Amino acid sequence: MKLKRSIGWFGIMCASLGGIVGSGWLFGSLFAAQMAGPGAIIAWLIGGFGIMFLALTFAELSAMFPISGGVAAFPIFTHGKLVGFILTWLTWITYVVSISQEVQSTVLYMGNRFPSLVQKVDGVTVFTSFGFAICFGTMLILILLNSFGAKFLANANSIISVWKLIVPFAVVIMFLITSHNSENMGLSATSTQEFAPYGVTGILSAVALAGVVYSYCGFQHAALLAGESKKPQRDIPLALVGSILICMVLYCGLQYSFITALPESAIANGWNNLSFVGDAGPLAGLAATLGIYWLVSVLYVDAIISPLGTGVLYVASSARIVQTMSQSGNSPKFFGKIARSGIPMRAIFLNLVVSMLAFLPFSGWKSIVSFLSSALVFSFAVGPICLVALRKQQPERFRPFKLPYYQFMSFLAFYVCNLMIYWSGWNVVWKLAVTVTAGLAVFVVTNFLNRNRLDVEHIATKLDYKCSLWLFPYMGIFCILSYYGSFIGGTQDIPLGIDFILVGIFSLIIFYLSQKMCLPKAESDKNTASLLEKKKSA
Image (tube, rainbow, N blue to C red):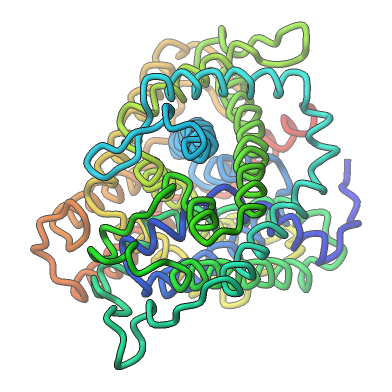
């Protein structure tokens, strides 16, 4: 079946805007300011332009293969089963952890109204035992909504998207009107503040750790509509670049209005100790401090609608990933069973357990988003690699949108991805390495247990391990650079500036190896045809 090309650039741009403006904007301004001071505005610009390069590579891939789960499918087309599984595993983990993150966003904001939900531990807002119980109950509600309310949520999506754009712009305007102290920016000779109190390292760390990258990652929703665009060669880059630029203006405006609205008492002890009454829900807390009580009510409503609306989607998507892994022999058959309601409830309950466990290694919203940002970027980094590989493997395939200067643009996107992961620091990178290693262990065990079973793409014993050999030095060398790097958790033996060069050389080597180790054309064609047929019949 051929998709109808019925969506114009405006429709695609709205999809991208709705995906980008999620729950991250509710907390990003506070945490970015704590890490970079007023220089956090630069962090939002860097994150936006970096994601823009990456989005354009996915525009070509998604236009060629307008299928759900493309992030996990593309590496199967180019590098086979093992690489495909690792990326699918990582995507599943990010989706499941995202359920925890979205629930956190809502319950943390409610902590302003109900103090029994949260407490401060070493300056970090965390949940009380009662708060954890509410999180668990909220996740059960997400399951209920996913089972019975999906159609309603789909119909309400357009209204929710408009709401998600109006509210943050209203916050910017009201903060600027009510309180605008430009001295907080540290740009004048009379200001007592510094624009970048923690230097370049603070700004770059904020890109990776404060929710900046996470806030931009919703571009993928627009990329998935590329196959239904009326004029993809024009509309895709216009919509992606346009939506990201609009969000850059929004986020920079939000950051500026937040900083200039802060009372002097909030930053009296330095930006890293920035705090004020109600900062568990920072925008609502600041609005209350400024006396804008109607906006406080609006923000509390948004703190329920935006995160939980996204959480329902993550519950559904993560369950389908488990179901697909079960069907291909990479997870137990038990989780692939469909209930009478047509919902893979066993997979959903598995994700419920894992998402609750995700609270254990992460202390607070920023910690969980720091991991999510790096994991998402790591899974997205395969996009530029797959684009170049497919130009070689399947040059005859029709590309509704072709990225100009594709080799240079793809490498640049890959390099930017690696920088953003590196900026997250050793404290995050080692968790990412453990996650990838755990995925490898699951792959080896499940394929050993199913070694005599056929799956759609391959005989299960054919693992395409030779095509995955570049992936292991990629993760291993990343750990070494991060451990000795200048960012949080590193030993700081590699000076700032030199590390940019080292990450560039490292990126070039891995990029080259990934192209040398891709599948032969015949295997690539076979995988593509098999998986597309499976998606078509699903």
